[in-house]
Image (tube, rainbow, N blue to C red):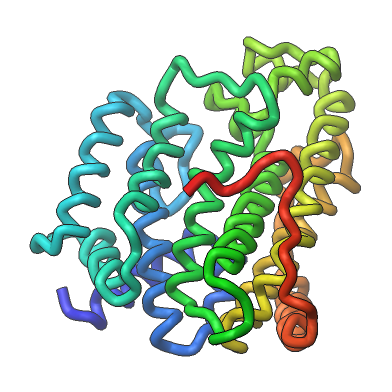
Length: 318
């Protein structure tokens, strides 16, 4: 496929898969945007394959059989793409270009697939919050790290490792927000990412995803969601110091996405038991507001001391 065809495929994937990330991606300078949306398209494709859905839609009706075989196939195609073999599927052909241009280590891509493997492995349990955070690292934190390599850093602002840690923080915060927003949607397909310890403390079932859907559990479930939103906050705060190390347009894009997702978490918290009556999202005008605010945040981040602010309880493993 030509470069134009790969860009068109990736752009369609992000527009249909996530309107929030699509709005933020428009702020990148063109070369960075091309790489960012192609990396997103690979992530989106892998998620779709595992859940039997199309661009993030149709999860409830999706065929999720033979999950381990699907993971194995994705791992092999990813390995071949990283090895430079010809790739027919646009998601892997685009990934190949990104890996080559930005020296993305294969083990980070495979770590992301390990997160999806947790979704299809019936033995995986989320007993403690550390288990949930490990999942968040794999499905989102590591994507933040790879995106940081795509965007590059400003020389002298901060050590690259510190910037990657902050990018991981933001990815983890995004995923904690996603989990809180999608508790009911995930439970409908038998998935629960909330730690069992928290569920027990709230008087909720720990071994019955369908049980979480009972109307009488909504108030307790809202309390657990609020706890998760609160847990995400230090990660959002920590990510701020990494934004200043990015090129300005990239900083603007990431600050915008950060504002949008943080707002979604706050809305889940504010809605309480009504948070799952309809999917919590942001309007077009909300996005425009966060685009403007993201520009201010990006500029302010330039003057903020580039110091380490480690997240609580957990750190990026690789």
